[in-house]
Image (tube, rainbow, N blue to C red):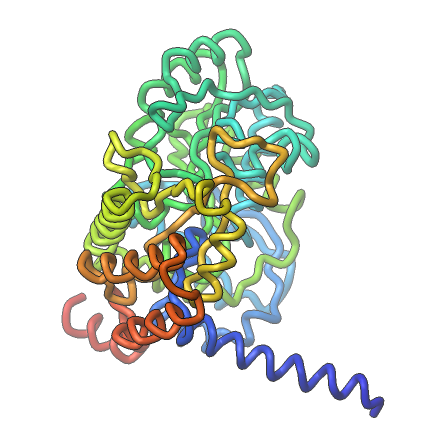
Length: 447
């Protein structure tokens, strides 16, 4: 075999092992868009290897169950998908779902495309990209460049770090869009769904709530409830605050003719328009997470939000500019920190990485949108450390280490040693099951 080829294969194997060790043992993860699976969920993924190789193209019914599949060998796959659909519907209190999406962006793609077909309207009102919306909502991203939607921005209040409901109502009434979208990626506070749902529907629009970042907080009852506030559809990732395998989901309540028309169009946009292989290997693990959320979701979400608020307050008290101070810094799993006075987001994120603290630079609402390489801010998420068992006092310890790096009190490499020492105190994953056997024992005892 060619020597260079062999060397590359060897490097691939070694780097894969190194990565698993690095991100699971040798750093503290504060990336707001990354979740942490329990040992039982990881075991379920490992048990689903054959499913990873299978196809299940076809149509679903109005309950989100399998209606027809176009391949043979589906008798167990069908039951698996139906079980996962029912478990997740129970968690979120809805009667329609599609679990076939392979990412949150895919969920947005199918929902936006389906609703644009249902309304025959190519206008969508969205939060401004610079104020936390995901790129898939924007005219420069999926919505505009792929689907061809004309996006119009909500009015954003920089003082409140949120959509301005009164001014945005005027925008919705004037533009009469087919879709009005809420949610985002830099997402500290609940959006005004309740205030804008009625005016949106009167204008002929469907209300879509992108819960990619906050789905687990919604499941735990610690954020807003989009359905109760008037959302028609929730789109989401299943691997951020909702601690499952990577994938996506769309949820809705399909009762009246208006919603049945919409869900049918969205289902058609899932298959055949945007999906072939739906990555079946993730589904059993996704269903198991629903049980964990039923049992532990409220406690996990409450502690996650508390840890994020604690970090915001502590960093602010120690001289950093944390956005949203007058509103308690955050009501979600993440905070936004302005580090422009310390070299900017890129420099500080790289310095923290050297100290084994992993997070990401992020544009802040008042930043120059053309300066993406070195924005003012950091986005810091606390769902990973919370699931590892961090409480408020531990967050203080972590923030002290971050402050040492940001303020250059010590060399990052020296701080990194203390980070690893702190990390070694949190070797177990909380708020979930330790194994499939533990799940089965629970079901036999309590179900």
